[in-house]
Image (cartoon, rainbow, N blue to C red):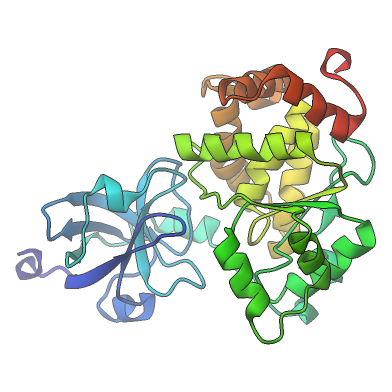
Length: 360
């Protein structure tokens, strides 16, 4: 066994499936793993009791590796460390993990990925007083890119899931904005009803819209390269085409799932690359204070490591420079490929811009 080779090892720990996002929770905390000598930035091997093994993967405090690659992560708020495919398929299913299986985590190389961990490590707080305004705290804003009309499309953190203390602030802001339809990318009906039944739930506008069937519970993962994600994206687009705005698009934090959908919508509505990047990165300014001028290293790492792969998924070609691509044409092709018909595409554009497809 690897432990006999004098390498730090966590052996035969029970696992559980992350039903929401996919992946394998290994029932052990980051702090306990640190005490064993395995810390963020190390390279590790993971051996599952069913024989499935992953060698030399990075251990990070966030999702810092390229899309489609496996990592071990201890993301803030997770109950345990987790092995997952970043923005990809469900490792639980890929590895064939089942009830009763266990996992061993073995140190492969100390500090191999420390440079990435250091450059990408970003954290935020859930305290309102740490932010300049309610708008910043709730990551709430009207989207103005391309031909999108003023005050028709908004994005934010969740107005119903209050795990990050932002829901009441988002709810008040969306009420003031006159939101009429919500694209909830994070939840299903069961989870929404659970939030609404919790003591202290304080999102009356969300409750009103939900009870009037003006909330789409899309329950998307962050695996934007999968068929399931594409199907749910099609559902989101059809819902915008079939309902009147103003619209609010949100997930939990309003970063990844929301980021992808907004990139797609902005591109469909004729936005230039610079507009898409600017809107995408406001989120990272709101949460982390990351800006091109003050923190260029972290800014560029997020653009290249998170936003570009999303754009490549829409463009369909990683050799193309997103800044030089015909993003509207690429987004239209993507929408048609996932099953959106021309009539719905025209209605979506008309609802968001007042301009039919032929005029974009």
